[in-house]
Structure formats: C-alpha cells, structure tokens
Image 1 (tube, each protein chain N blue to C red):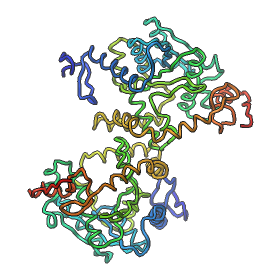
Image 2 (cartoon, rainbow over the protein chains, first blue to last red):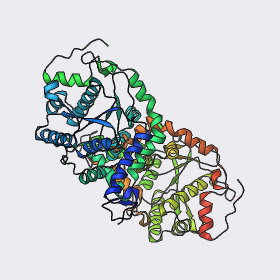
Image 3 (cartoon, rainbow over the protein chains, first blue to last red):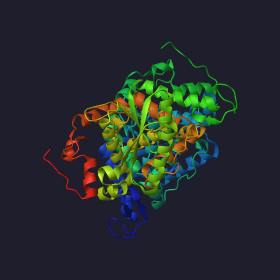
Image 4 (tube, rainbow over the protein chains, first blue to last red):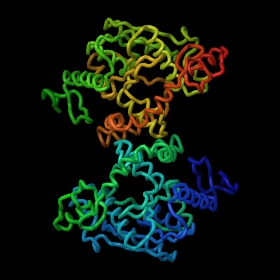
Length: 311
Length: 311
C-alpha cells in the first residue's frame, strides 16, 4: 500500500479514510485533524494559555505533543489518583514526557491535597470506581485550571471515546448528557472552558502517532476500569466499524451537526441552576443541598462531616 | 426457578423482567404485553378489521395468534416474494396456521400480480435485497389493506427488531426515519394505519410463545438477508443486553417517551409533501418525479418504461 499523498510506502492504513499514509504524511494528517477540530469548533486561539490533562496514556501525551507542535502554549496537568502501581507508572510517563520536551507539568496528588484516593472514594461513596474517578478528575482539573489562570482545559478524549460515550448516552437517552456532549464546553462562572481536540482521531491513530514520535506511554488499561460499561460500548461499536469503516466518525459528527442542538436546552437549564458548593465553591446543582458531589465523596472517604445547608 | 406469579416451576426466564414464568403465566405475560402496547399507543379498537402481515416466521404467526386470542378480528396477508424454496416453505407455514385456526389468509404473489420477484427487483434496481424487499412489502401491504378495506395493518416487528432499527437510524442520525419510528403510523391519504403490537416482546419470547402453542414456523433466516447490517446491529445490542438485561427495552421505550417528538416535524414535513404516483396512485415524494420507488423497481425488473412526468 502506498501513501495517499506522496506515493511512498505507507506505514499505516486508515480504512475510515480509505487511505494509507507514510510516516511524514501520517504525522501531517494527525496534526491537520487536530487543527481542523480546533478551528471547526473554535476551541481556542493562538496565544491562549492551555492546560492539558495528562494521564500518561497515548491520547493525552499525543495531544500534548500535537498542541505544542501546532504552536500552542500548553502545560500538562497530572492528577495522582492513588491507584497503586498503575498511578506510579502512569506518573512516570507524564514526567518523562515533560522532561524530554522541556514542558511544564503541574502535579496534584489526590491524597496529599484532598485526603483520599480513588479506591477509598469509590468504596466510601458506593460508586463504581470509574464514576468516582471521573467526577473527581473533572473537579480537580477544573479547580486547577481556574486556580492557575489557564484559559482552557484540553482533554485527550478521542473519536472512539466520544463515540462510546455518545452510544451510552443514546442507549439510555440521557437527554441532559446529550445536550452537554460537545467538543467545547464554554467557560461559565466557576467553570473553565473545556475542549476535546482529538475528536477527529481514533485511538489507533494516537497509538501510532506516539510510536512514530518515540513517545513512551502506559499501555495497560486502568485495573479498576475492567468490565466497565464503556468498554462494552467500545467493543460493540468496533464490531460495527469493522464491517462499515467510518461509522463511528459519522455517528459523532452527524450528532454534532444535526442532533446536539435538540438537547441543548436541558443541559443549559441544568447549568443555569447551579449554585456555589458551600464547602469548595464549585458550581453545584440545587438538588445536592449545597454540597458538590466531589466534596461529598471527600467527606465520606475522609470521615469528615458533610456540612449540609438548606438549599 | 419458580414462576413469579404462581410459584409453579418456571419454563422460561426473562432476565429483562428479572422473572421466570410457568407455561400459563408466560402466555398471560405475552398477551398482557401486547394488550398494553395496543392500549398505550391507541393502536386499534375492538371491532376494527385488522390485517396481519404474515411471513411464516415466529413473530408474525405469534402476533396473529395473540391478536385473535385478544378478540381482534384479524385476517392474515401473505406476500409471495419469489425467494425460491424459502418462499415456498414460508408460505406453507402461513397456510397451515390459517387452516388450523380457521383464519382467513389473503395471498398475493409478487410475480403473478406485479411481474417480478425480489431477486430480479433487487438486481434491476441495484439495491441490496433487503432494501428492495422492504420497500416492495411496504407497498404491497399498504395497497392490499387499502383495497380490501381493512382499518389497520399490523406487522410482527418485535422489541429486538425495533431496537436494531433504532440503533441503525441513530448511528447515521437519520432524522426523518427517527421521526417516523413509532409503533403507530396514523392513517393518511393513501396510507392505512400501521401498528406494531409486539414492541414490548423480544424474539425469544415470540419463539417460546409459538412453541408453547404448537405453532410451526419457518426457523431459517431469509437466505438473501445474510450479512445485512440489521443483523450486525442485533448482534451488537445482544452483547450489551447480555451484560445489562433491559437495555434494549429501555432504549426503545425511552426514545418513544422522551426523544421521538424531537424528530417528528421532519417526518411530518416529508409526509405532507407526498403526491400520488402517476403509475399506481401511491403517495410519492416530489423528488421521485411522479413515480414511486415500487413502480420504478417494477418497471426496471419487467423492462417496462418508467412514465416520468414533470413534477
């Protein structure tokens, strides 16, 4: 197979694009897809101060590299979740990348800063680990970006992630989540702008991008994620993509073009109703009686009293 | 395992309902689900003249039996599609059911009446067989019901079918199809009312219902359907249902409750624009230049000229 652009031997075939690419044209393709995603959704402007949430995996390290290549002023944020060896190992990949590329890495350790780790938080809150972890990361990412004055927080959600999340939201028709599922969540009081510049790249492309650039990343899945629903949705979509390449990309892009707006009112309504958490000041829905979900988990995990106020 | 209702030994477990049923309570369950579907969506009234489209398979024969048990005046309609031995065999099951139950079976043979069969139509129209077949059946079912003065046409689409079709429509976000995906399509000029009373029953339940009643049905899939997308969607949903029983039922019912209405304008708009086909009089979109898709297939397959008129 030859490269679609330059006719040199291809190193990767992308069935969704019905094309092969050589090393250089593949790198150009990845950069171009990120540039187009940023432009299409007006994710950020040159000169803005970007914080990239990095886990040590291929997606977030690849994103960090791509944003720096595209000329963005992008620092990394690593949150230590306290998931044993997995966290130790993933931190070392993030640090190695920062060191090698002369990039700035902000580190926040959940135990040191908030007094609990994900296994404890998950048990205490009686939530599945991925739920406790997701909400904790959202909270810490946002707080860190706000505290340190970043303009925008970028996360490494790729096309496969977005398709799987969309599939899960669609299977249960979670209309509020569908209204919020967008590659840009604009800034709002208490919220930094959040963007997903990898929405046009699949996980296989990110893995290849890292290999091509000699970026070492943690290959293992998080041990606490085993058997979670999200992975089941990915498998189901992969089977369909295998038969009909391009299905995932069309699923996500057509949703954004033609369907997302039909659900946006529900998400906006929820956002408008938020009030500051009485403990940490984060925006919190009125149903939470004043205390945000993160502070609840933290209080349960650390044995502190939850200071519930009349809402 | 014991029957949830009467504590006798169960003959079937329905994980989606977290219940087992004995023979009698299972039959009652099936009847009850059909009764509830008919009521919930006001599908039909007692005394109406119902035409059931029967293929010789478990769903349509089960439906025919269930509607008669529920006291509806239901005749059968069998359309001979000319798919070799498969059509011969499926016709014999439909006839045997009618004979055994003293029910009226209307038969229409595609070749005798319209001059072509599905293999020819599919080739001539360069459509995949399931597409040519689906549109031909829709046309013939509607024409037969209108010609013979039936109030309503009932089809044997079950919960698994509806979930797979919904999944396909969602993957490509076919907004017009989503607006039309409903267990009742009301009557309109040129269209009989169409209903899907099996929307609350899965295919496993229909198979068991037929076995319990000694209803013989054709077990083979249509040989022309092999490898079609719909079957891929079913497999993907089955894998998810296996992990989380009830996912399919929630996917379909929540869509109908909370989402369908967001797409209904598109479907209504299309329906309002229909004009009579210049060949057969069936409602036809203006983009078809006067001739409906069925008459086009028929003309191509039989070598007749398509009488295109200025629209």
